[in-house]
Image (cartoon, rainbow, N blue to C red):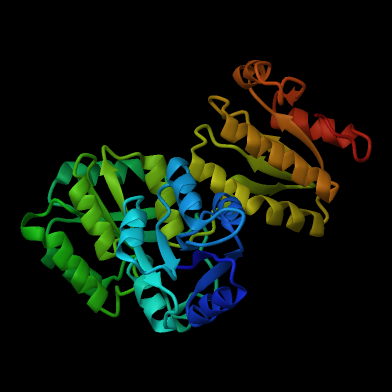
Length: 383
């Protein structure tokens, strides 16, 4: 389960120490020297954890933290503050803004790793998988929930995936199942009687077979205390009921370290097709964006220099989608890839209402797009 950890600190020495501290673990360390760079990297890479210095030039840590918490797409990223200012008043001020933990410099590497390990699951490189699994591979999801209707909802909501969802009602049944068939991901109802969810979580972390398995908590949206308690205990994520299954699927794929690129990018003869799904949440946009450059570059390397950006399934246009499409077109131009857009009548009409999109032209189908690119002159662009 590979995580991205972003360290934002103007001290190169501190950044080196952070990189060295996590060298033995299966994680990618991203670096920024100030809050401006940190915000840009956070938006681009969606890290699992941000290690944020307080005192920096250009934009300090407190200002960056405030901007993170004000951004709906970034506010959920856990933040640990690194500060040389260990005074009680300063720490309390920062804590009220919504941080998961803090550490006072200078610090020991093992202390940093121990605190970070309470927030994200750190897997030893010795345990790391040699190859990431695809979103189309089979996986087992264990749901520990004493309400059969909720288990059925999850099974129905994920039935289009290749994942097998197994429901059990008690802690004992869960332990018995895990002993026989360790699942790829576990969802536990936080509403189980006698705090059984937290007892089970501790047992899972003490069991070598499930020590690094991502665990989600499940609870009604209004139970904020239970949500905070679960995140503090080390649950990978908390899912609120009623369940948003698009969000759940994306978060599960991320937790299981599944390669999601095949969902959005496919090879079709001489063409690369980038598929925009009908519902484009910030998580989906982030996924597509993270794969885009590498997928188009790999296509060029394989001899495919024509791309179809297919938005015909899209139900509506918003700024996130517009930025994504602009990024795709810019990437194609940088790589010398000829491209065209496929849309539907609603998207074509909505494009007329935005200055950035009103000049865009669309093909009506994939077949039309293939024909258009096949007869288009070299390096021609359609928008």
